Structures are given as C-alpha cells and as structure tokens.
Length: 322
Picture 1 (cartoon, one colour):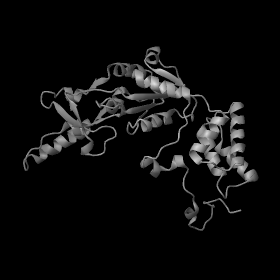
Picture 2 (cartoon, helix red, strand yellow):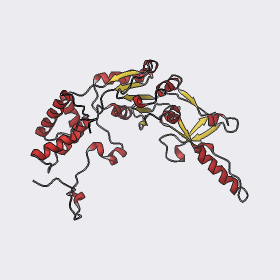
Picture 3 (tube, one colour):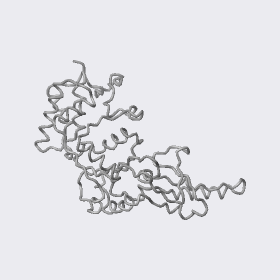
Picture 4 (cartoon, one colour):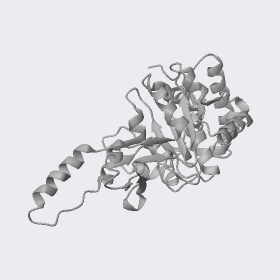
C-alpha cells in the first residue's frame, strides 16, 4: 500500500505536495468564492420555522450543540432565495450595537484634514467627502433599504455583553437607525455616499439620506446560540426559536452522501457507528468531525489498523477536552 504521508519528517526536501489530493468540498475556498453550493440537509421543522420567520419578519434564534449546521442554515436560505451573500457578524464579549451598525474613522478624517490644510497654499482646496470615513457594519448593511431583504447571520449571540441583546431590540422593532456624524451635517449635505459592509470600491457605495437608514424589507436575521448563557425574556419574545437537534444515523448518512457522494460503504458504516456510540456515551462531537474522518478514511493510501485507529481518535476527539 502506498504511503499516505505528504510530510515525512525528513531532512531532505521533496515535492510531496504534488501528491496531495483536492481538498474536502467544505475546505475548497476557490469553489466557495465561485459561489458553489454548500450541501445542507434541512428537516421539515427547520423549513417551517424559516418560513414563519420570513412571513413574520422576525429574527430566528437558532440553538443547538456545536456542528449541527446553525450557521450553514443562513447560507442555505440566501442561496435558495437568491438574496446575495450572507452578511456575518461574529459576536464576542466586546461587541457593541454601534460596531454592528457602522464604523466611523475619525482619526483618518483628522489626518486627511491636516494634509488638506498643508496643501491648500499650493493647490485648489478639495471638498471633504465624509462618506469615505464611514463604513456600514453587517447589521447596518442588512437594514439598508432594498426591495429584497438581505440575510444577516449574528453568530453566537450568547457570547455578547449582557446589554447587547437589549440594545438590538429597538433596531429590530423600528427597522432604522441614525448616523450622528451625518445627521449633524444634514443641512450641508443631505445625501452622503458610504461603503456597505460587503463593498469593495467606489462603485459599491450607497447613498444615506439625511443621516438616517430605514429598511424597506426587513432582513432575514439568524442569531445562533450555543446556550452559554440565558438571553433576556424581552429579547426572546421578539424572536422565533429553533432548536436544531443532533442528527441521527440516517441523517448522518444523508449528510455524508451530500458532501462526499458515495464513499466506501464499509468505512462509512464503521465511522458512523463509532461516532454515534461516542455521542450516546456523552461525548460532545460535531458533525464536521465525522465528515473529516470519512474524508481521511476513503483516501486510497489511508493508514489501516492501529495507525488508523489512533488517527480516527484524534479527529473524533471530544470537543472541550484538552
């Protein structure tokens, strides 16, 4: 059997990368950049809750253990309904509402103003474009008025500071927000062009009227939570809640087939049985760990025997354990 090792721990350089097979589909960044679909198997209950959120224009709070597809659900909705790329806001303990709405680069504006003052003696004074110092955040971009809604993923809301969920309530209820840096100059420039979160150059800039953003179509908002802390009742009242369950063996086979086609049946059966057994014994495992193990197992030169068992155990190592 051929040696599966690309890196050998040798002192002699070699062109081992030439033997490296294509990446797993979920790690193929070129395909993702080209808009290739990420397979996602959604159940009837998930479909019903997504549709309810669409009809009611309410955020969908998605809970469940790591690796069950909470984040991937947002991509599935955006792709199927042709709502563009998903706007992503990853939450941590320092995240604030202002960060999600927009960023204002006051230091860059001050620096450029100083440079203009120095250049004014030898050149025609330039009119300041304040919009160049403002970039909408993912939430701010999602609320920008459009005929069709955007999809916004607010990931791991349970990691936020205790005040952020309540700060989001007003924005979710009113569907609008102000940019004070623009409202102060509304008499001077009623329309200002700013960059959205997913913009890249001047052609992508959007117009803000009077310093206020008011949505036309409320975005489809998915908030994910791993249940690290309780969220305020007032916040929960304004969300629909979906708890994604850990997939059973039948669903696992469907997920593997969607990502990897029909790999070696014996290897898949062995891994699904081991994965399911460990979960039933209380181990916290994510579905993508199983996919990783299957991908390695079906490589033509994959190790066998004790070497494979050690590698399998490393890939299926329980989450949260050092």
